[in-house]
Amino acid sequence: MIASDQSPARRRGGSWRTWFLVLLLLAALGGIVMRFGDIDNFLRLAEQARPAWLAVAILFQLSTYANVALGWRAVLVRAGTPRPLRSLLRIAIAKLFADQALPSAGMGGNVLLIDQLVAIGITRGNAMAALLISMIGFYAAYMVFALAALFLLWLHGKATPPLVGAVTAFLIVATAIPSLAIWLRHRGSRPLPPRIENIGFIRKLLETVSLAPARLLRDRHLLARVGLYNAGIFLADIATLAACLQAFGQPVAFATALIALILASVAVTLGPIPLGLGSFELVCTATLKLLGVPIEAALAGTLLLRMLTLWLPLVPGLVLMRRTLLHRSAAQSAPER
Image 1 (cartoon, rainbow, N blue to C red):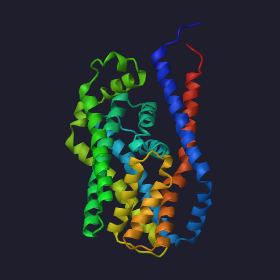
Image 2: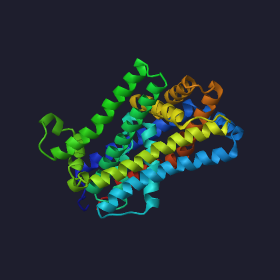
Image 3: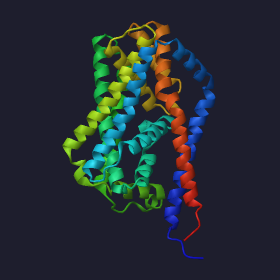
């Protein structure tokens, strides 16, 4: 037998990635089983919605995927490794699906993103740069909208201590995650304490983070551009919620939709529930009711929004994740050379 060119460490790395993908699929399938009846309810809601506003909501939601892919493309172009937007759109669908399947403060799909970018010919360093810069842009935009929501609540006289506490906790998390990523990048590949050094996952993560080109992370124009693309994602989601409410004959101010969507998103970000099942619907509906939207319209609009943001992308997300898992399994079981 000819010796294999794959080291044991590399095989172990591929093994945990495979298990990670399996976990994502199981989490998503579990969510479907738990809430299978909601899919039928969502379809009934879609039938009752005004077609024109439903079409507007769908267009707004599709634009979120485009903004995610455009943010990555901006980094890859600046790195000198541009890729077609079509390829990045497929990765965006898979990553957003993974983030929803295992929320974990929005980190669920980051491992998937790196592997998928490497699979289309991007160096691991540039892939990590795309991840870090998009993460910084995402949390920067998220914090701006969270502060805006808190300010608007204050204007409405609804900034209660629990809401202020939740937003404050989120701001701490939103600051800590990109700050930790940047610190790891500046730390480089310096030796770790022996106990940590023996954990292959952490060692590999630090090695990959250290590969991200520093010049890209220092590019303020690039950071601002990616931040704007991520702001576009939130604006599109807010507009989607407003269009969903309009579809049921309930016009709302943009500020009302902003507050409801951001507070519901904060609840999902801070919570460990797969797919954010229940927590998003509860917080969004309750916030809309708090701001004067009738409970029936608030619930119907929220459920329709969830159909567009979660259930409809679920099928292509599952297909893409399954294809990724099959490709990885085939690569690991290929004959040694």
